[in-house]
Length: 158
Image (cartoon, rainbow, N blue to C red; front, side, top):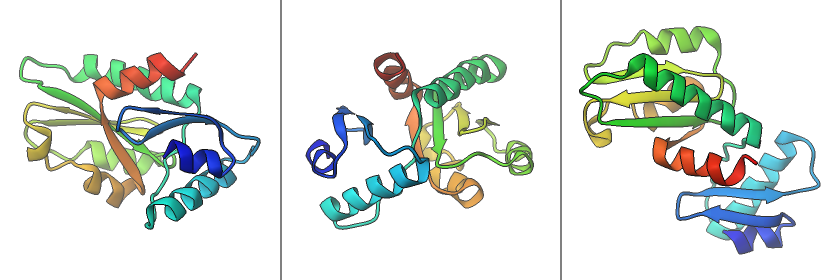
């Protein structure tokens, strides 16, 4: 992935383990142009479309701060894991309200501007609120656990 993005003109490309998270520099200034260039480079390299959820360092910190706040709001003794679906775009307030009002036992959901936060008291693989459910409402998304999100912020937000 680093090589493919480097060949496409992205600079200082760095990845975080095998999570699909990438940090880079580019002379492109439009978010849409950057996203399109990333998607084109990955499609050429991988042979299939890869939707990109693009975040500035400040946006990533905002999602992390939301995760910390929501964890305090939603925590109970049965919580076993926290996940964040990182959204390609911003969540519409009316969609966020409707999504949060869903009642699924063992699944607590809060929606931020660029992330859908899920606190579980069951295994992630048993959850009904997965990435596919989020994408039906909010469009392309990619889910990370809080450990990965924390590492990304620690490494890349400075």
